[in-house]
Image (spheres, rainbow, N blue to C red):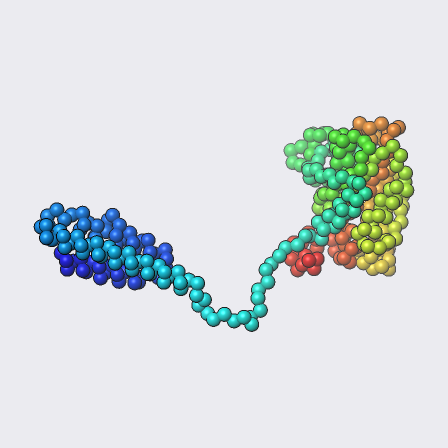
Length: 345
Ligand SMILES: [Zn+2]
């Protein structure tokens, strides 16, 4: 019996010495001293032995158990020690690897800059869902029932709602202006707020057009809004964005929701007014429509046009960013090309 115990000890210690990972320690411990181990089996089945044998076997098994525990403990310390030692010598002259950091998309950055600029003028920042309805995208905004923008050629209508009308006919918002009525319905007048967001048009993409792009709309409604306060708003924004005075021109423009409406152009900063593909070779770029809010739109929002007037501008964020950085293709912004985005870090 003692010989058998001796071989159990030898084999056990050999097993412990062969352990190479800390995870194996518990497995081997269980195998050698656990409930189902040979050692414990002997310890619990000594009834047939004489008193003398019981004594010597008992002492031997206790000794073996202790030696296993000691060997396991030693092994554990050794393994932990070796884990903190580097396999290869440390070379402090090797250049470090830089941590990859993200950055804001240039359109997001522009949006934040505008939010700051407008907040300093006392405007609230408002946002709403990308999905709108015929009621908010067209009806409320004085679009004629047969206006071409209502056709699926221009607007992405949501499947299954095409045959419906009003708030039941759903679309991806083709512009942000619908949000103005929603805001005014909820908050009333006077009001001054901005609402940035992505809008969707069913159109062919080229260097100047994308199917989804970002707009930034600003609106003031009060009892006495003049054309000049709208102009001040435009100048302030452009100056804030470009850090200097920007040449602007206003042309008459027709939008169902304005009366009168304007097309606001700024000089093309990509070519400095000489003409390039961004400005369609005429030196000016259309950055925003704007104008005095049409009385019918105020009525849709529950406001009396005899009392309230308003001025709104709608900035094409993508185009503004193109101007700010001299980018000549709008599609790059949505290309998710990291090489392009890294330019703005
Ligand atoms: Zn140009």
